[in-house]
Amino acid sequence: MIMSTVDSTFFTLNEVASVIWQAADGLTPLSEIVDRTVCREFAVEPEQARQDAEQFVTELSEHGILLVSDQPIQETRPGSVEAQ
Image (cartoon, rainbow, N blue to C red):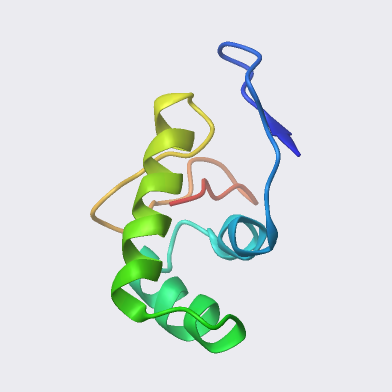
């Protein structure tokens, strides 16, 4: 379970969402996370997995939980990397 500090919304993560959350390192593109992890660990078609992952990430982004970028996120201070 994760919570938005912006609006206190709680999100309960299923297994797939948990895999995406754990892999969101600010450097690895979502498409790569889906292809390398989600599609290999779960019985899901790549296109459906991408659509579902994009929807999940968009929802978290709208609540200020994830920062979405089309480029790798640069470290803002030593030891901190924001999720992509």
